[in-house]
Length: 154
Picture (spheres, rainbow, N blue to C red):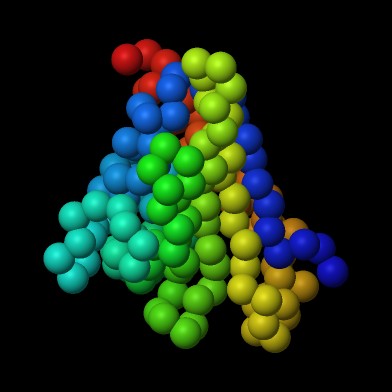
């Protein structure tokens, strides 16, 4: 079976702090992602901390269906790592992550996804993984290229 994960890395001519401010502010995801066009913090959260909840408004495959996806921040190391799980607690479907690795004054930014390893997700991936994997990879590349354009122009 094909792996239920992937990652894309883009080198950015900007310090990690500048990139972190964008990838960890979920309210700005609509500026970068081709599928998630808005997001909002929930339950009084105002920024990235482990356990903070938010929801993302997704237009699947840029065509639909359109739905709100509940998310929870699972890892948060400022200027280094921002990871969140998609799905209700105990029913996580997917985990997304941004890893920032300093390279001199620049930064390599890796976006990745990992589907939850359970029977339903393995079945889904076996049937549709080839298409969804390609969509996710293209989406990660687009997201990172848009972030790169912003941090390198400012």
